[in-house]
Image (cartoon, rainbow, N blue to C red; front, side, top):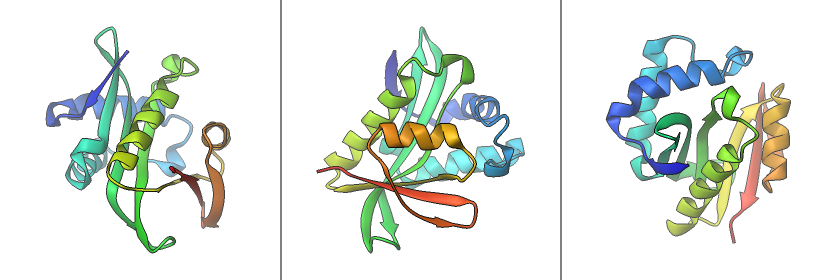
Amino acid sequence: MEIRRVVKEDVDSFVETYIESYKGLEDYAYRTKREIKNYFKWLLKRDSDGFMVAELNGKIVGFVACDANWFSLFELKKVGEIHEIFVLPRFRKMGIGSTLLEMALKYALSKGRDLAELWFGDRNDVAKIFYIKNGFKIAGKVGKWVRMVRKLI
């Protein structure tokens, strides 16, 4: 598996992978290709160095977007915000998501962040288990979104 920085030419793969990865979780996802493309552009603009893609045998199988420029209104400081992480369903449980998350957290730490923050949909039990397994703790809830944090140092 290769992890590399996202480039703007990855947009179509991002859209396809996003749609397939969010099947069954549409309540928490952008729904139109246009919205997803705009989301891709926003992630790339927010922190292009923290936006990474996983490839397996030359095929894109997942993405992570870590924003080390994010100011948390809950922590009142900049954190490593994990805006997005997803892996194609048929490639899950192979360590790809954990590797992407680890790379994102290392990136945040390299930018001087001591805390990672993320949000997930309250009925996404798979995400909850994944994040807890990777050291995150629940830090609150707003509407349908659950906030989690993890100390990096």
